[in-house]
Image 1 (cartoon, rainbow over the protein chains, first blue to last red):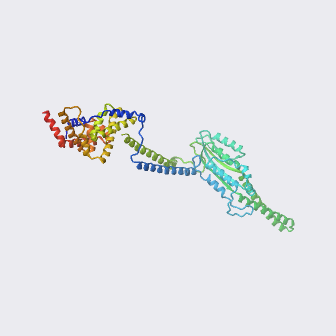
Image 2: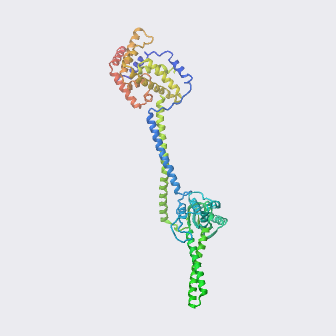
Length: 383
Length: 169
């Protein structure tokens, strides 16, 4: 191996035989200070392998687009399954609308309980309103002009339609606000023309709760639901609408028939002379009148239910147990339930957010790769 | 520029073995360095960066030249370079020495010749050479060793070294 110093001397000796061209530096300076070269230029990125760069970019765009599309579609489906307050609508919302829209179980005056679907404008409005309770801000009560704008038969059907609306809301309020919330609910119900049909309040302990069932005019039902929802954090919301028009018509037809029968019995009674006949006809009249009274009672109940919707509102403090069928568990059972629900919620949250997280990770990774590639290429192009 | 131009030019000459190509390469390298001077912020990194630009320019020239010219023609071109301001004997001896060294360098493959020139003529350290040729310092070290081994085994270089030793004695 040749000595470094000797090699250096030899190379220097060889290099000095090269005469540096005169004016070479001036030529460089002249070229550097030319108008087009005087300004500082940033390196322009020119991929050394343009096909590879274009392929990579296209791949990143395709993958990103697919995941973005999937995330958007997934989020839309996710939203459609949950209420605006982030709570699943169990038994309400769309279920209620389907109940209302397809619950026409009877004819009108004929009394035949056929499976024909009676979708009246009012039913549609009811379904929209009931659905709106679960899928968006509650719509205002069905307005008259829309009903009045319909054609004659449809309008008549809408007027004669009997829709029974029921619902239940469980809301959480801040500590110490159970009483004021109930007072507010009472005044709201009164303002809507309704009343409280049943109340149950437990205050003074660690877990003050209140339950009240309001009866409000059916046209104000959605407004009442919206108002109740706005008073606190909704823990659950169920609304249901049922078309009882057919049932009402059946009962009404039975009453009409029984009244006709009673009138005939009365005519016979007037003409009867024998004691036995009189007693027998009287028994029929009493029996028929009893049935008429019962059926008329049912009609009144249906009228009342169709006129006044029932809304059950449960109010509790945040973190407190709401009144309801499942009694609050304690101790190990409650801890186990909490752990199970926490695990389930966590898994759901992870799965729900995995799409977005995966997209973010992919985009970041792609950006990192592109940045790294660009930096390498820029550095190569620099020199 | 005034400090670095002669050294850069001669380095390019040693690598390219053609003065015209070397001048073009140096000019191109300095122009590119001037245009993209904004990319270099560290003052200490300017020199290896300029040499890196120069090496790239030289490599581009070599690639073009390899397809166009024969190596012998390049060597002949170097033979015509006159030695500066020496006595006829000294000039002849120096020209002879330079020719031997150039021939020995020309026998080296490109990947060994460039590190040797950068290290033992331009005076770059191993790290700076690594940056200039975009290789690891360990690679530079092994290439330098291999180049020195080959040059030491070259009879022309051996003759020059033994002649120097005899003169010193």
